[in-house]
Structures are given as C-alpha cells and as structure tokens.
Picture (cartoon, rainbow, N blue to C red):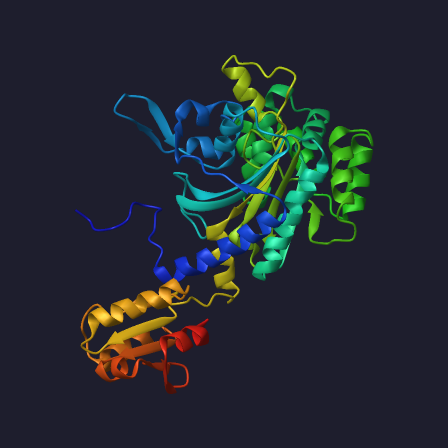
Length: 433
C-alpha cells in the first residue's frame, strides 16, 4: 500500500482551511446582500442526469471527465462535475418554487481531468444562480456579485462577456452548418489555450470547413472598445441580431467600467449555455485561468422536465448564474502575496497547574461567553505549554494554579508583548471580547 492521496486530490492543512473559510464567509455575506438563499444538493447524482445531452453536452470536457460509479443495486451514478446541473434538477423537482428563485451553494465538485496549476480533480465551487426570469438585469446582477467579491478579496479582476446567440449567428453566416454549431463553438472557446493551427486540426477532425474556421477566428479576434466591437459585429450581422441586442443591453449596465469587457471568442465549454456567458480573470495572474465563470442556461430545467414526460405547462424556467472557483481564487491570492495563514482560531490557551477539573470548568465559562478556548490535554509543564501556544500564534495564555484559585483569578499573559496581569474570569472575558 502507498500512503498517499488519490491522484489529483489533496489534503488542505488547517491554516489554509482557516483562510478558505474566511473567504467563504466573505462571499456568503455578499451573496446574502443580493438576496441569495443557501441550498445544498448531493455530491452523487444519477448518471443519466449528468450525461443528458442538454446538460454538459456530449462534446464537453466535463462529460468526458465525470467520475462514474455504481451502487449495490447496479444503478449508474456519477460525482457531480458542477453545481449547476444538480440545481437544475432540483428546480425541476420543486416546481412550486416562487420565482425568481435565487440560491447560492458552496460545495465540492469532481472532474477526472489533467492536473495543472490551479486545477485539481476535487475542487470547491461557490455558485449563485437566478431562475425564473429572462431579464438581463439578472445577468448584470451576477456580474456585480463577482465585481463585489473580488473587490472584497483584493483581486483586480476583469470579466469577459459574450453571448452564445451572437456566436451562433456569426458561425452560421460564415458557413458552419447548424448541426455542427455546438462542436465548432467548443473548439473556438479554446483560443486562449491552443494555437490557431491546433484548433484547425481539431475542427478538421470534426469535419468542419477549414476556411470557415480560419475566417471566424480572424473575425472574433477584432480588437477595440466594447462599443467599437459591438458596432463591428453589428455590421457583420445586424443591429437586430438577438445576441448583439442582448450584449448591448447587458453592457449598458456597466458604462465606462473597464473591468467588464466584450470578448467575442468566449463561448464556455458546457453545452447548456444559451445566451450570456462570462469568465473572470485576475489581471495580474491571468495564467491561472478563469477564477469564476458562468452564463445563461434558459433551457436546462425545461429540458429535464420534457425528458421525463412531465411537461412544463405554461411555465418555463430560464436561468443564469456564476460559479466562483475557491481553489483558484486562493491560488491567485497566494501568488499576489495576500495570504497570511492563521495557525489557529483559538484566542485563549489555558494552562492548568495541577488543577485540571477546575481549569476545565473555567474554560467552559469563556466558551459560553463566545471566546474560542483550548486547554492543555497533555499535562505538560508551563514552559512547554507557552512554547506550544507560541507555535500556534495563540494571542493569550491563562495560567490556573492553586494560588489563582485561592485568589479567584487567572494569570493572563499577552503573548504579543509578554505582559501579565491577574484578572477575575469576568474581567478576562470582557478584555478578550
């Protein structure tokens, strides 16, 4: 036996996990500020839910990377590859939800993918989604949430925005058959990862016309301001093209905001996107890749309902959302030098001097007052206990011995400056709070 983690998995040490929890708490505060409510779904889903052709898409990387398993009843299952597909399944099972329904979810997802910097096979996503409206204010809300999150975290972020409807129109006009649109879009989405020749080689293997692909690549590389790009592509297609119309409206929510950028080649690699798509990058560390991404998926919930023969009556479930990659966000913060890991969340360490039970009871008084407290469980001497507290950067140490108990006090030491004072438990609680 080799004592190691599975390939692509990793242990997260307590100091880093404390830092990750701080990030999550900051995100949750912002999510709640926008009216999102928490939701939790299982890590394991039915395989047919994950593999539906209208979910990830038959040609998406995610579908080829699903961890498959079977239960004891020989039913095919899979580990979720994102939080969007389970959310769509949940909405389809709970059609009495009041709309719009706004949820956030934080959880682990799994992809059996190649390992590289900022990418793991088990990783944590923090999602917000809005279902029940086609109003592009919902799309703008997701972008604003991202801007607020990364501002709070101290990351200078840029958000690339595009629209699948625009891409469909552009590809059709330039000779891509409708039955090949999804396949062509999946390849063009890799422009920031592969060379033009590599993309052409891939699309040739799919039976796509090379001249059309090269022309499309040349067109989507047009540079300029958001307005200049919108005008250019409106001339290529039409000012009334649905994708152009939606892009203009969405970008109108962010006038003169250079953090929100129209990126004509952006497509996102999942098949369920129908309109707006967006990706978030760190301006200073773009090589890490997208640290957040999402888009509009207006047909996903409805497709699930239609596939099981339940119909959708007169009600439809358009949706939009964005997913924050916690692991990549932490990687960005590390590289920016903005990480200062705490060794512990303990504020007070109690050292009993032969008075374990009395000290145990006093520790509980501090905990009842909302103070994080640890206590020596090893019956070590004072010097070793002070060294232990110093190792974990615990800010205060309380010594409790016979003299302290007789005087009804504790000896409280400030580990930062070395000062000591004798205080009642009540006074010490007030001081630490």
